[in-house]
Image (cartoon, rainbow, N blue to C red; front, side, top):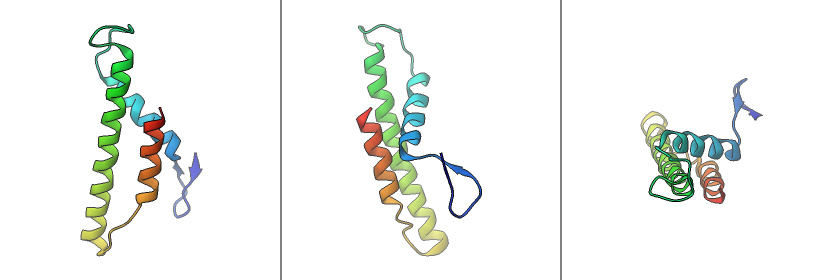
Length: 91
């Protein structure tokens, strides 16, 4: 984890964020623990990745909307959100 440049707190790297998101969604989905069947672990992992990608897009939109409303700017953290998405897709 890195330290925030503006605040004294830890900030997750894109790799850490991607792993955290995918695992959170994966473990919240029903899973039969096997490699076959409708609830197999491979299928659930892919669904966890899909949910994580949707969450990243939602966070990006909310962040931009907040910056536009509060500060009159677009906020543009696109590089950070894109890096998280790339890490999710690698998994």
